[in-house]
Amino acid sequence: MKIPTVQDIMVREVISVRPDTPVIEAYEVLSKYNFDGVPVVDAENHLVGIVTDYDLIVKGSSLHLPTFQKILSELPVYQKDRGAFRKEIQELQDMRVRDVMNADPLTLPDNAPFEKVIAEFRDHHRVNPIPVIDKDRKVVGVVSRYDVIKLFSLVGPESDSLIEKEIIK
Image 1: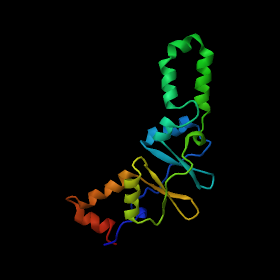
Image 2: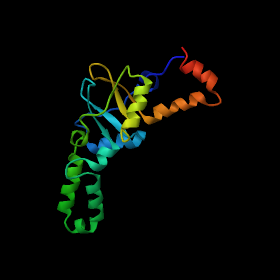
Image 3: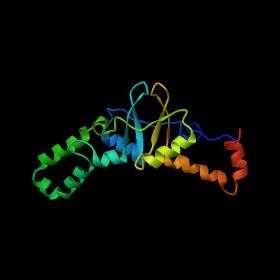
Image 4: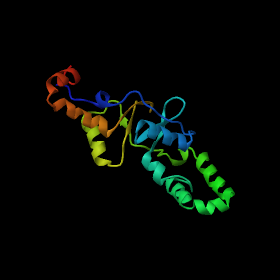
């Protein structure tokens, strides 16, 4: 029986963003695809960071999600001073992924054994997903906790045929 590797469970069709992507667009990507995070890549698909839902909540300049919440709670005040409101909203619109991303994300090499994948998720509780990179730091996939637990389907009632198709080669 072949032991699975990161290649066997990772998602190869990676959706990513660039450092100059507006934060609001990055949020829309996370929301649309129900992702916890996406790799941030340069024009040659080299990994330069990751932006996660966590980054959008707690990081950033003076205007991030907690600040946006404050703006919404103070709307009656802003009704009197629309200029201040416009300024705060413009700051939010001007924020870029580079302002909030993690520039040194946890990664996995494209030849990582399954045990390494499990260990990284076990040891880094808040990390999800993990970019998978080749020797040149190009993103070749992403692996999430969900990708790991999908393997449980291999031991269910229909497991004999699945195991033969997926792992025994």
